[in-house]
Image (tube, rainbow, N blue to C red; front, side, top):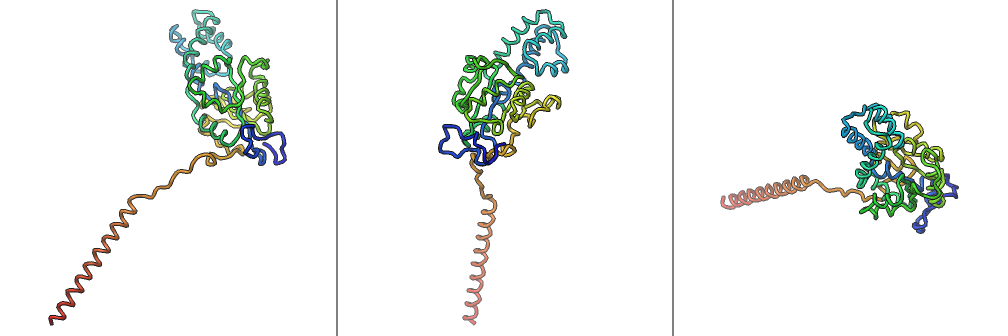
Length: 292
């Protein structure tokens, strides 16, 4: 977290009219992993694996599916082919798996709560960075028809970035992303990642990290995370001294219950009718007295 005297962090250039977030302690920059924090692709590899196994009349045990979670594609393909006795080489299986996952990832859904958080951060003049394990060409394909949303990210680090020499779990990708956000520093930058290698990379970069993990992921795999959540819908910005959602979202309008007014109207009509009857009775009494 930034201290009140922090001078290393300030609002991004597009928010020149806004005061720096570091005027008070808190997070002023956020970095998201595209595949596991913006897009919800956590089940895509598993779905592709199960489809591939079925095509070869094989089944993959649940314990093996859990074990391959943090693995790279090559390591995953080699282990599955060996353990499940697939009738093809692991290189062939890896190629087929990549083809199938590419089809499934072509139009992935957004992580629940991702759009709300990103738009909230932008309205609060926070700098946003994005890291991805795909090339720039594949990235452009993934975000097709969503370009307006991804304009909120001022920096994107691709897998084929010339500065990127080592992939996760090495911290390089997050160090580069932080440097391209201008004055971002470890004290005021928060990472969102859903992979064990991504969490390790952020931790080694000395950055706080929110891990978006599936419920059945063992707790020991998220020990390095500052906070573990299932989706971004569960994220509360105030836990990291970020502005609350109420700052950027309109307050719900309070509507008066209709039954109250109807009861009051009914009561008013009843009182008026009673008063009229009483006046009529008084008039009749006076008339009888005059006649007498």
